[in-house]
Image 1 (cartoon, rainbow, N blue to C red):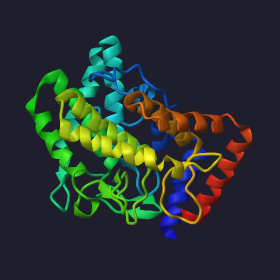
Image 2 (tube, rainbow, N blue to C red):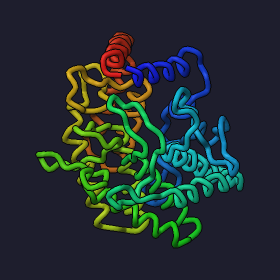
Image 3 (cartoon, rainbow, N blue to C red):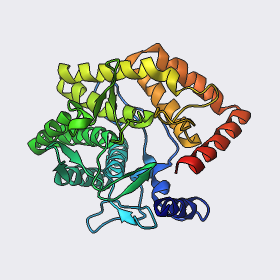
Length: 323
């Protein structure tokens, strides 16, 4: 009960009182970037506002997020990666040294903060407890963090040819080849589908946006290094998503995850828009027709006012019962 009260205090502070919070960073309008799918250049999404984040910076300029309540100000490896990628995009557009320097700050923070978990697998840890229905106890790690950190370091290596970045990337890749029960972020289901798990919980939740963002890190690696093994892993993950997209479709909106709860965890309007954006990019990268079909279908849901109201109502009901 105390954990639930702490959660709602933080959410009310961020939403109702419009205080600066972690939500100020995460909820930038999802936008597809002008990327080159045949080589490593700008990241797939824009992250422009994330690049300009100035709410809380440490002494060397690394962003921290304010979760309020008992969590307070914290480093988040995913946020630092997205901040870095946004600055990389801006640097590639305008060649501003300020944006390049911020990008390199993110890359170096990732190098310095990679740690072995209790299984001996190298991951980026979140050093705070976080309420995701079941409590994620500090320190916890994420397949999304692994993938987006990889996207940063591929670009850092491309620009500097510093072997330190290559050594760290090789350590990160092990987490995608290792089962969640052995300290990795890879889950194999009973039908031999492979999933990247954003949160390592049991049973797994198969969060869609985190899965896709994690995959893009692997794609960046195999594109730059022409690595056939990593390409095969990426393709296996893509097959899993395309085979299971129907399960994320509620007939009026998309699910955030597939976790087996009695009430489905529906995506917020922000995450529904993010899903559409991600599926459009996946279609461009793979030419798998299912990505195009569901991105168009979910965009139609988004443009339906009645569906928006149903989605909002069901999201509120889910939060009340499960958080």
